[in-house]
Every structure is written in structure tokens, then in C-alpha cells.
Image (tube, rainbow, N blue to C red; front, side):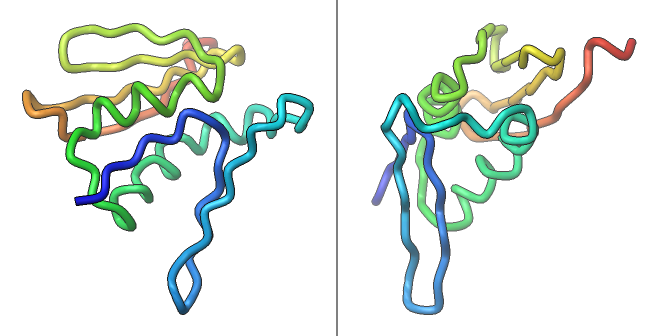
Length: 109
């Protein structure tokens, strides 16, 4: 079983013959900004369609720091808030499997 956690910015590019994973660890590389942060739920769920990940909660804990977001742990939930007020909430079962991931804009309430 292959387990994966990406603590640094990465891009997963599927091809007809497999896939290419590009990891960017250069601190001078410009960040992608807000659009990158709001795509976290999509990118993170794509991970499970390409790799077998045993503990989704642990993988998200390893993945979110690459965005430098403050993270709050609340029971079986992980909440990260972007500088733009967007909350990314991951809900997990008791075995760490992802049940739901949502985004909400806390500044528009």
C-alpha cells in the first residue's frame, strides 16, 4: 500500500502512461494565491482517486501547512482559514477517512 502526504506545493499530472508528480520546494517560487487555496478540497480529493491513502485526516494535516494556513482541530474536524476568510472544513470518521470537505466564506456572513 502506498501512502502519501505532500507537505510542500505539488502538482499531480496524470498521463496515458502513468502520472508525473512535480514537487516545488523553492521558497522563492511565487505562491498561487487565493485561487490555489480554494482548490484545496478538489486537489485533496483527487489524491484519493490516484493513490491509496490509509489515513485521510493525517494526510490533510500534512498537506495544509504547505499553504501556511492556521489550522484548528475540533474532534473529527480540521478547519483551516485563508487570509481571505475562506474556511476549509474536513470532516472525518473515527478511522480518519474523509467524510466531507467544504468551504465557506466567513467574511460574507
